[in-house]
Image (cartoon, rainbow, N blue to C red; front, side):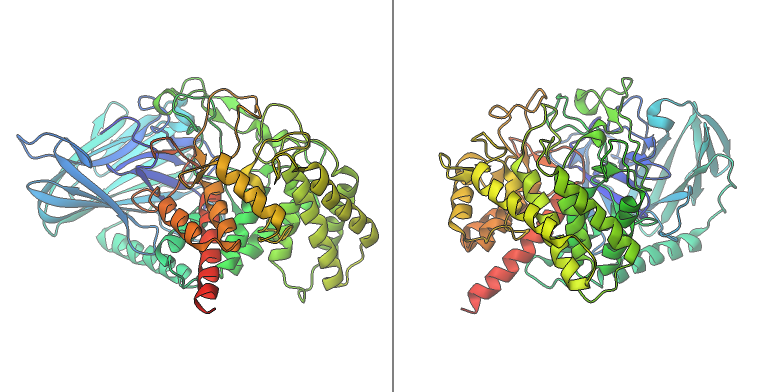
Length: 620
């Protein structure tokens, strides 16, 4: 079992309220409960010694050792998803046999918040004989809280402060105490299977019901039916159906079903540069990320998710008065709580020494004016013109736009949450334009009261400002912020939000400038930190969101051969089960929090645009 496996060497399982990462070696090294943003139960990914983990691995036959790519101590490992599900299978190939661990989390009632979550891990031998080794070492509260072990037969109970984990063995898996942790070995021959079920719940709750083999077989069938039924609503039938379906399932796995709020990523603290300080907590709901994710889901036919998020977003507008004094905050907890105090977990070493590890996110208090564009854009995308919008809901939306008329012309921290001071970011102005433009359209379409002349005047002033101050004659391109010549890949969204046509001369010139400066072998950097200091040390990889937005822009601009080549190359950076982190490093490694919703939603947008343009081209 390797310490700190590569970020990409993981699959994701979940029950639509929380999730877990399982490495390609069968080690669960990230799991929080009862929610995505709760303290961790296993965080070995951030500290191999203090974080805790739940490993089920296969031992090599006696006298066999060695290694190499895809091997560990003479055991070859492979990992895959059961097609169109969130059921993860880790395969162990040895000279004496082939074994599998099947991991999933049952989806009971995803719309009712609960403190009780189960992880099912089924062990089975499919050929010959396989000796499995199990270690369960929970470390509650990010590894800060001690626990006590109670072991009785096939049940192990780990009691921490206010939280309890029950581990039940089903079949020939004899649990043994190892201090306050548990270990076991089990040898299975072809056709034999066993299982362990981890149930995490409130410490005062009732112990879980004892399960048998029939219960587990039904649980497996139920979770498979759930995912097949859900993905069956996908309307995409294009050229890249497998990777689009996987991205859709990933976005669904990272959506908190009780409220409809998507999180930005499943993890915290994974670095943008190995050993660097750019390590953030992404287990929250960004207005920006969530709005774009909901559009991607809606474009695939998943309307329920779109409506659920709209309800969540409208509640945030209704609540108003964010702690920073603005109508909206840039991010919230999945239940809408705006308080995300950032703390440094100094006792955790960080992935491969990438410290500090932070929980919470101090950027929550930043001013980022672009979120109003994403919010109104999301509301417009999730309701047709004929839909009856509640009067109170419209009043809250209109009040936000009235506020925006007075506040759009302010410097802010921008989309990338830089910590180098506020600037007049072009992207922020762009999304303010989007907010007012869509607000004007909705007011007319829904016949709702609004100060349309005022909104129109502000919208037009923003457009004129972007075309003059956001445009650099020297660079022949739209730039990151006023008064600079720095390019910024966030502006790749300009044609997607209909600010400019994809073949406008100014846009084609901007795309050409980005291609010469921000693009490296089809991979796209967000911006150049050396040219535009962001207040942080170190560097970062190419930003996968931006790469897929680049593909989208190329496709819409009619540069189909280049777009398709860039898209196909980008897909080679997906991990072994089709997942993407935030960034790609200089040697092709995935960096940053994992998996990243931004990346997967942009993949979907790029695939849809490419399919549309290729079909149009074929019919010309």
